[in-house]
Length: 329
Ligand code: XMP
Image (cartoon, rainbow, N blue to C red; front, top):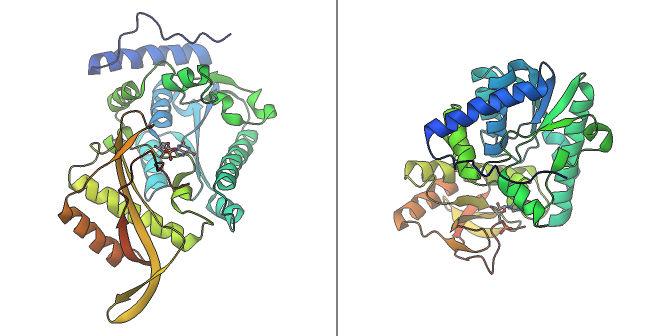
């Protein structure tokens, strides 16, 4: 039976000193657990896996093998940042897998949201397992499990992603390394800061596992997916410029699968709309809409229309949750 208690005497990590003490303790613990053996980690570039990677690099350097799978549904600049931060700056042993065509080919023509999620999840495991099978002598698997994952799994809300749903032949080869399992999200961020990770990685807004796939409703096409990616990049850039990064909980764009008539330079256009969603919440069960200043909305409309091919209309989603969910699928 797994011991699921957070150590009773553990102080909440609220200062740099406590974060540093945690790092020192974990580095020693990781070294004691894995010795000179190799550890494998699926590194998405999200906060949890990035902090785990940085801790393990500090503890065991090149004996950590990171696998970053680009499934084509990541935000603009994300794979490049993972390579820059981990391979170039931290000198990590990083395997970058370009699986874009593989994912998009499997998803072609699939419009059912649950089937899309299922394909993305299965394919991810397949790609990761293939990489794992190629590696010899790796005995440990690191995971970015955090304390709320353990509580949710205990409460029966969500399965604790033990060995990430890997097939048995792979999962049984590994012992788990979960250095942030006793931390809350804000503590993971404090530790990430102390480890020198960039602020936009540490304070990233939530991003769903199926990525931009759920923001390209219906059957994903490459051109519409690019419209989602480009409009999302503009929105993030403008939020950062206007001091809204880290203040609004989640913000993104959606490009639905229908077209409407417009006019540009005296010519008729027939293109997609781009929907902006910006929301706040404390518990994710109930979500309120962030009301942006009119000037910012005007500016976003102009930029998205001018810079994103295939868009001729920009809409703002004023619907709270409930009745709407955060994502469109
Ligand atoms: P919903 O749409 O359920 O979203 O109101 C609530 C929060 O969960 C995120 N989300 C997901 N995260 N895999 C994830 O890892 C998913 O399939 C998924 N669907 C939604 C969503 O971005 C929001 O923060």
